[in-house]
Length: 177
Image (cartoon, rainbow, N blue to C red; front, side, top):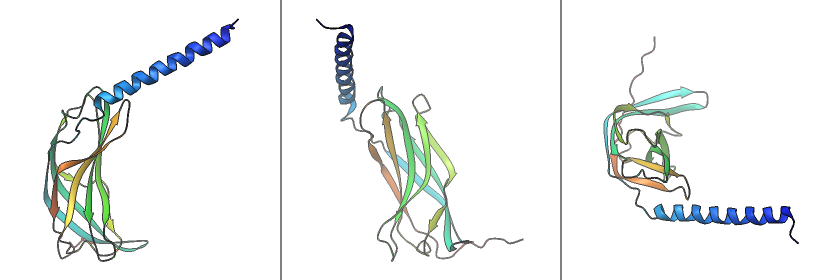
């Protein structure tokens, strides 16, 4: 009555349904886990330069910072990797909210879960469209991360520690040879 192809189709559909149910069960076991950990940030030095480029003058800044965090509690069987990034938030007279990513790092499962990064320089240039960085008193640095799971949603977690730093009122002089 039923051909071999229809029986194979039924078996394949049933197997797919079982695999989907198992994947959902795996996801639900870690879906409501708290993925935040305390973060300690410290800024040791800020350099602010006015740099000419082809589009006009821009401010460029370098931040030297210390980051300490312990990621062991975040990793479980459903976490492949973490994508960490340090961002700066500030406001200027032209824009109410500016957000810039300064540094990022991928931490794989099996890597050392304790991170202590000393005298770390920003990985990406921090440009401001105007001159809103000079003398800005409220630039907030925050460490956040995305948890990349084996199965489930991709949560965005903000670390519990952040630091607000004032920027210098003058530019650092660059040497021309």
